[in-house]
Length: 331
Ligand code: TRP
Image 1 (cartoon, rainbow, N blue to C red):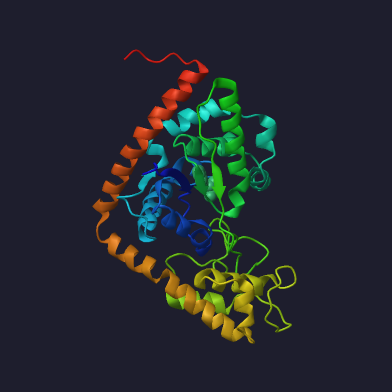
Image 2: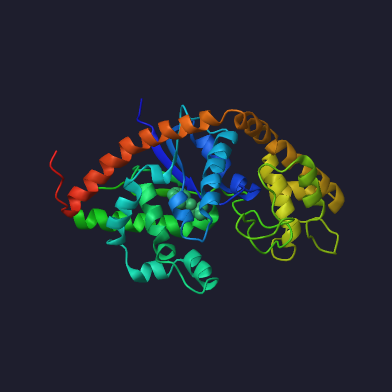
């Protein structure tokens, strides 16, 4: 049997996961664990690039781990772990910071957007994509399932792997992004011109993974559309409606154009969107409730995940440190 290829991905522990996270990336993580050796981490070190209350960070990290199990990640197959539990992440990030340039990091659009919103910019926000590259390269991941907004970060990880290999000899696997086509970008229900995001305050515009069917119905009913009343898929002219069509398409494995053809009235479409999303998230809600009854289970999953991750990450780190000429510690 051919060895399974590795995949790695990470999610920040910034509060509730959204439907956007789920459709854009998380449900593909679940599918990928069938044929790949998968590593999935909660990137708590990345969360420190923003101001976050220490108690909230800790609570959110546990919450993210619970959600990873609730969506159906199987700890027997996938290593589920917390980034900071594997000390090679920041160690390799340093080697990669000495590979990356100020110029290329300055061109990262996510950095530019976030930096604009702050008066002072943390150095960690600037080097965020390098830590992300370390996350990926430590596991020789061939593929990285992410949402569309992470495309540029994966491109940087590839670039750094290629440059490092060229400079110091073959060390890293050059990763590929896996970006799902349908609903790779789920938009805010109230502001369909922007991404549905857990970090932007928009309670009515954001569906969370654990919303009740009633909450989902209410938010979908209030979703912004337009006044011309015609159901057709047009992302530019009718962004709100297009988002609803994208959502129903993603939830029912159809194209948005097919979905559009089946409706004449916005109200009927909205009812079916609410119903489909509620059903899609039902198993997640149910498993999450079950897991909450057994907190020690999550601790155990994270301990085992970190041990598996560490075994791979430490070997890669030693290889990289040796390649750049760091003196190995005496055994
Ligand atoms: N930057 C990613 C995001 O915002 C999170 C992330 C951190 C990640 N490290 C990663 C994703 C490594 C994939 C691989 O979604």
